[in-house]
Image 1 (cartoon, rainbow, N blue to C red):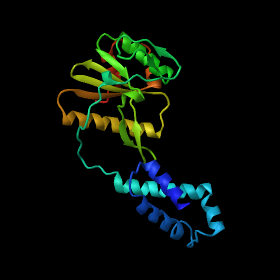
Image 2 (cartoon, rainbow, N blue to C red):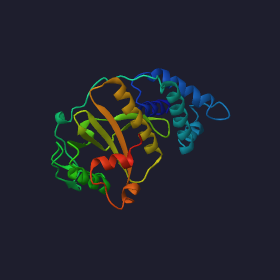
Image 3 (cartoon, helix red, strand yellow):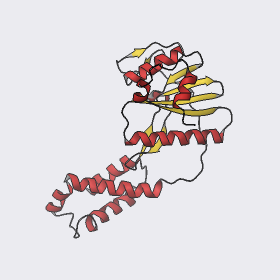
Image 4 (cartoon, rainbow, N blue to C red):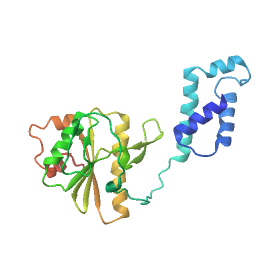
Length: 235
């Protein structure tokens, strides 16, 4: 049972080493700190208690919180280790759902995870003040790691990359109903743009966060991308 808890914690936190050390810490926590009195792991009642939902949650949440506190640090620095070239994306299969056939994207179909995404892509097709755009599919491999609402490290895939000029790109997130993780994602995206721009001078990256409710509130939809920028830019 200690091995099970240890493996789940390592999987959740993406730990690739240190099983033996973590195993010992989990064992000591369960035996001596989880309950009011020290327990015997060979006792059947102890094993039954460990199977309770509240007990397993307490174990996982305690270790996730403490490990993240030790490992997720703001070092105040960033570096560029690699670039993603969309034209090098390998062919991939997508779900059978709504799509548009684009003229301004390298992909032969733009699949929307929501109606709003498709609607926004349709407007990008009309805008004459952008060069091209791409839907950020998982297969593109453009992802940003961030600390989610419960303190764990997760991957965030922004919705669109829009090329305004050879030296200016916008990373765009469209959103229906916002949750706690979305707040953390957008904060991380803003910091990502700052870090990337500070570490290279070839291209300027900016971000836009467009909520569906604010898009729908526009009596007249943006006629070009510059109007989108003026309406939703946080700069």
